[in-house]
Length: 242
Image 1 (cartoon, one colour):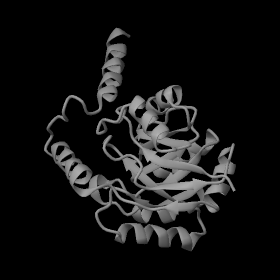
Image 2 (cartoon, rainbow, N blue to C red):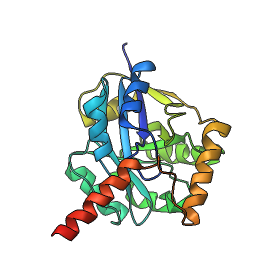
Image 3 (cartoon, rainbow, N blue to C red):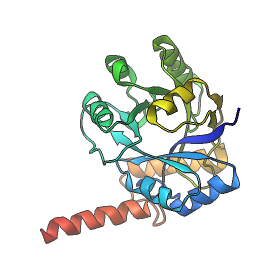
Image 4 (cartoon, one colour):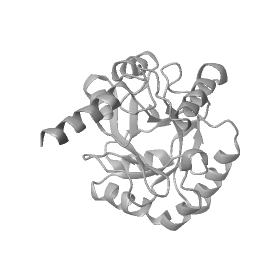
């Protein structure tokens, strides 16, 4: 059966902590036989829309939304979802758009980005669980997420969570062809998951240094989050003009 190499959970420079351009991501997909990219910038969908304009492969418009309880991913979105809502309300908004609710890095403790115990309170709204996050240093969080998914009979996926252009798709899934959100979920249930992790020296250490800058209130280098800063500047200008 023909399958589609699919990379889920990718950030472009529309995320404040990423420096992957839409053009670079499109070139990566061409060079590595990627047939589908699920682009999920932090609290933003413009990056995904931009990748869809320039890429030759199928692009799923997504957003990694910062909720009050942790992060959730919405896929197949048509409208931006604001951060700061509860996880349940955020998931309901994703569903209202006909989108899918994905649970990324459920057990992550850094920056409060994992839903952790709160996930059990909204299993009815979760469509799939990330059972490998390529940024994790240890496998324990992934094993706990995998156990959660199996316990609740939820589809599983592996997430790249890429932020640096040096490593974009160390893990991916080979999916049977799909056309709709429901079809995507059915394909996930039959997918071959190919786990993998970002390289320590070229990716993980630079990302930890980037996180340290954030914790100490230091600005990121000028090439990081270029379009994120531009969007914020435009929004401020619009407020002043009004």
